Image (cartoon, rainbow, N blue to C red; front, top):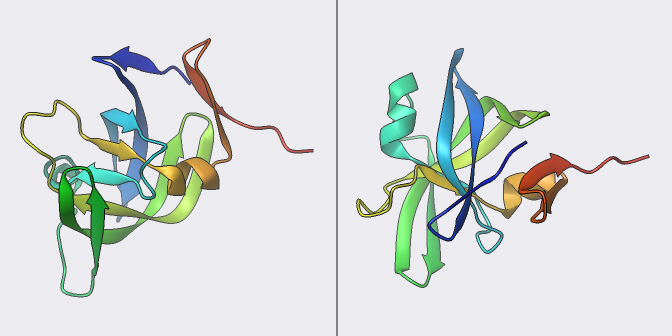
Length: 129
């Protein structure tokens, strides 16, 4: 799967499915420094993903300080040729000045056993024998 190098950031896209509705989300930064993936609440609202009282609240810490988000179970998450069923992703607000729709963190990268090939600007799952 192709990676774009935009404004010093590695970006790609994923497809998610929630309650039978799917959306392709682009402008996702591949962030190996993020323990969890984070999607924009505005983008996932397009397929009726909203906070519910039963959702887990997650606090994240980084250079910008502390941020809160909520965690949702998605029926399907597809990253390139890799597909995982019933996977939890964090949903939250992103700073308006960032022209991105979220982060792909280590939770998804490790679950998918992804190789990030910077020479070819590609991301793909490792072949395990």
